[in-house]
Amino acid sequence: MMIFAVLLEDALDRANEVRQQHMPAHLDFLERNAAAIKAAGPLRDNDGAPAGGLWLVETADREQVDRLVREDPFWPTGLRQSVRVLAWHQVFADGIRRGAQG
Image (cartoon, rainbow, N blue to C red; front, side, top):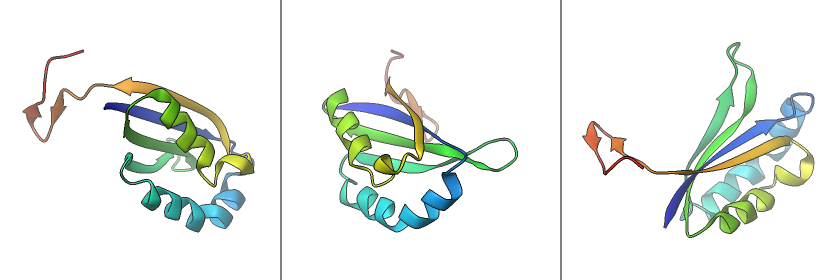
């Protein structure tokens, strides 16, 4: 299994309206996919305005991450302006080294 950091940038002209309307379905989606989506939450800019989201996804490959992004109820609304998926290797957590840097 691999861990991926998913950076989701929102289209700011639609963010508030779309987010409010589709948030319950988005949260249900996250709960249904909790086996893969280990953490998720909003990102804010320096002024505190919503800017997008961040997911940590543990799955076998990048294709499964792409599928999850497309299945998110936010996806067909046009809220997501861009998506960046990066492989992540955790080396430190809770004050403990977890493995070799990679």
